[in-house]
Amino acid sequence: MLNELSSTVVFERPHDEEFVRKWQLACQKNIAHVVVMPNVTKGKLDNFLNELVAKRAQWFKYGKFQQYCIASEVGETCCLCPLHKGK
Image 1 (cartoon, rainbow, N blue to C red):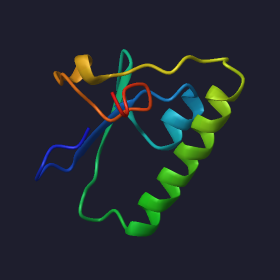
Image 2 (tube, helix red, strand yellow; image 1 turned 90 degrees about the horizontal axis):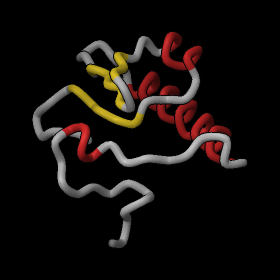
Image 3 (cartoon, rainbow, N blue to C red; image 1 turned 180 degrees about the vertical axis):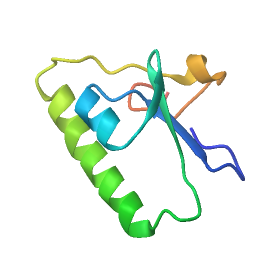
């Protein structure tokens, strides 16, 4: 979830506490958020997103963790998550 004109990005909580600590993510229940400050470079964002995508592939590969939708937790009624995409 990304609000227009906001520097806060909300997404599902990662399943790896080491990842959470490394990137200093603020987490509560099933959600995490980051505040993207002006000093954050495109390169750092690319590194974060590439690592997050790779980790997600590992977490969900063998069904060890179940994917979930955070729309209701952040006050949204619809989303584009993999569980609801195309519905």
